[in-house]
Image 1 (cartoon, helix red, strand yellow):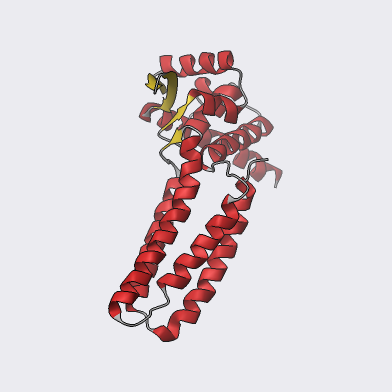
Image 2: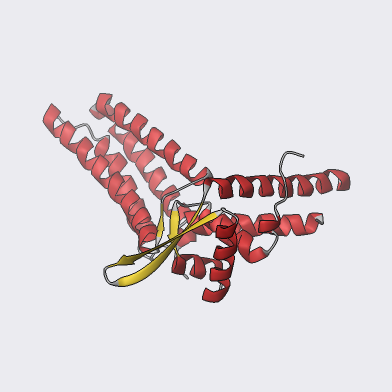
Length: 100
Length: 138
């Protein structure tokens, strides 16, 4: 097996957040929330879980006087997600081979 | 994990990645970018004489192309997303390399070839519109 399934990405919403963040350097909390269709509390929970694992970084700051939060996937997070997706790909490919 | 679950998770990840790298564009953006790309290639390859006018045409072509790229990236930045990673980054790098190759060709081209640049410009414009229209905000 080339990839390794990671429990961190077992839930759909966490996989969504990680895959979304893998396409950019960082994204505003609201952008992630809107694109992944998650409630603020759910996204906070998923982001905190990924941050605890060292897979995501949370940065707080201001744009003018408005407080903002940015989320980013760390290099460890990118590697873990790539491994997880490779493992999923392998499971799907094996099933297709056996079916064919 | 069941293969069906794996496929569903892969689809989900793919969709999320795409929504990160493909910004939601306003309705006017695909047509504007298509016109800018057509203008960039047509004007850039027009090759008028004397030399300074040719340089000016190429500079205008570069400006049109950069404006088209700005329209796309500005929408993404306004959405609160910065930087581009993964396969999409590779695709943009390839596009920049191809654009530089066209720029070098335009520098060496003659007025006889201007129709080729216009044809390529029209084709690239249609392709740009076709690609970007899928990203228009619902």
